Image 1 (cartoon, rainbow, N blue to C red):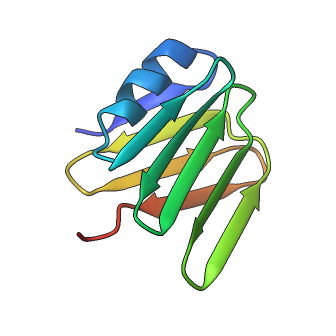
Image 2: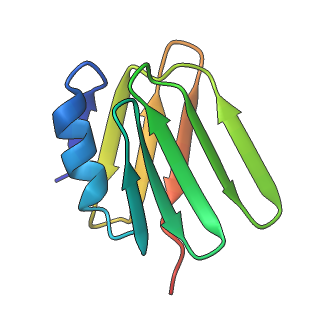
Length: 91
């Protein structure tokens, strides 16, 4: 079952993202960054995010909810004017 977390619950967001299976995880006070080879996802405490992989980069508005689906290999960021799904690249 996916973890559906409010950004305000920052510690739980960080814990869920750290367990997502990235090859590199960087946690700072205000941001968590996941790296999967040439792909990355960064989520900030205020809900803003960036993501990138070959052929596209995304800078999103503010997400209010982070949905981490470990089984499906997806993180979905949801806000009033944004919904973006980052899919964990296959190794």
